[in-house]
Image (tube, rainbow, N blue to C red):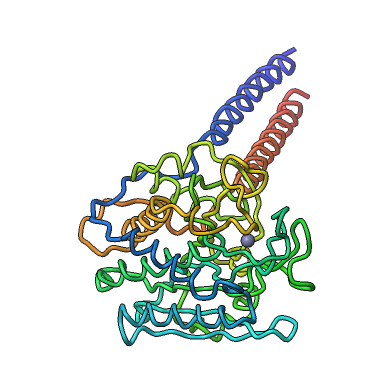
Length: 387
Ligand SMILES: [Zn+2]
């Protein structure tokens, strides 16, 4: 009789212990995964009028073949970047990464700022334009001007270099401005350049990345990719290959600058194979700032058409992108005392939903096993005592 009473008590205690375990772990599902922060107060120097002229310059390099891989226009565009960076500083260090795709000579262009600092932030974009307007029902074999798809991200990178260079002594980070060739020649509605895949340039760059940094002394903090950032109706998506803590921090930074339509609180969700993916696979936290360019007649109907031209470029969209990235860099790396900023750095500690779920299951499993073992032990002890 005593045995039954005591074990009954244990069962009740165990039941409540289980309820408490579940009650305490369940809210983890609803915890915000990012720290709230406030942008540091600083004057932003990104000039969108200048950025707009850099888009126009790239379009005007060659009006028949634009910046298609293997053409003179592509080569002249690389030279254009070098001349723009040398206007900032005649000694601006750059490295050329030559590679071939099916025997066609291609070239990534890398500029480095603050090389004495071991932590590296990569700002990337592709600069090639698409050889065929495969989504243009009227002119599917004509080349794409690529005002947004190529030139916009490149223009923002040049202007960011100019703005950040003025404060480089106060920045505690090395910045890479990295322009990829051969991103945009794969197959969508119809084959692009036969035999070419997407993101050839960034894949080749990551394969050879050891040639571009000293792995025993330098480390990569993050990579931010800009792709189609200058079109009208700018609305960024929640890109799912991106490191979520990094992308979320960029969204929050932009929202706090007042750019709430470009960084909506409920963005479209999408998975885009883009130049950030090789860097993620290499282990660098990376985020893609990109728009919804598929099935988007009201947002961006010009993707891979001959209408991706200067008339659909918005000065304000360039400003939103440039200022958000500039602010993000000051938030994380501007060296002043009493910097109150607390972002998600280091973004590599990114617990995505799947990891969190697995963690919770493990916690529940361990507590359940512990409870079962305790009950069995107590039950056997009581049984022994009463026998
Ligand atoms: Zn494209």
